[in-house]
Image 1 (cartoon, rainbow, N blue to C red):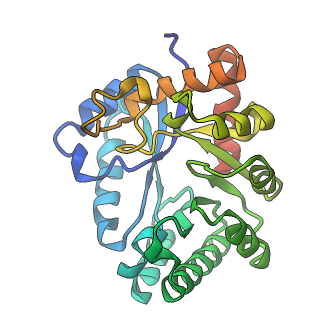
Image 2 (image 1 turned 180 degrees about the horizontal axis):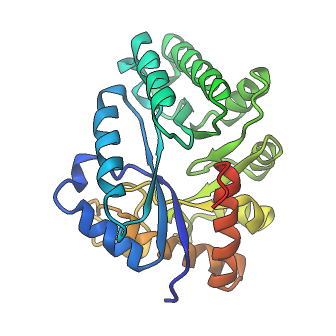
Amino acid sequence: MSVCSLFDTHTHFDVTEFDADRIELARQAKRVGVEALILIGFVAERFPQLLAVHRELQQFNTAPKSYLAPGLHPVYIEQHQPEHLDHLQQILQTQACVAVGEIGLDTFLPQHKQPENLAKQREYFAAQLELARQYNKPVLLHIRKAHAESLQLLKQQRFQLGGIAHAFSGGIEEAKAFVKLGFKIGVTGQITNSNAKKLRNVVQQLGAEHLVLETDCPDMTPLCCQLSDQQRTRNTPVNLPYVLKGLAETLAMPETDLADILWQNSLAALHLTR
């Protein structure tokens, strides 16, 4: 497998599952071409650990460059409190954050469809879009079974800073709608699954210019990296080249050519120049 410069645009590399071997994994990831990664926030109580891991990774030139994206995840909506938005704003004021995320709407589970739960999700999504606008940041979107509602809210808020629709699971028309709003589409290890026909159709119709890579580690392990059907295999940034390989095969493109496009897409989505 050739070594290409890759950007892991969505990781939870700060979680406790990586405490024992995080730096060694970071070094391994850099050796296989992962030059940059984003540490994604999801609950306020973990913001200190998010910042600590970010500082830790910055100490090593043998690790990928680390970027911060704090946010309040919709799945954990019951945990979020108004003061958590204040904490998020404080981080945006004091840290060099690249985006706000992951934020959005999720109605995948029955409890998330309950009116009170969904209303609170919408409230926190809108509040975080406003913070992103205030600090001129793109957003990293988590959306499951709520693409139409999320698009509607983005339009209502007139959000124009774009970002990434993470681990995209919608259809082609929804993908085009996000692209029209300035978003790139995040592709995970799911692309390595030959049964992921919906995702494969979306990326083939969109083309490489609208896509970015992500591991979503420790979840979304590429099929080729899973050790057993019975036990969940931890995903790591080291597996990002397999996501590239699966996407290159789906698009019938050379990996090196595709990697160059995806790198530039990542910079564009995150308003970075290098």
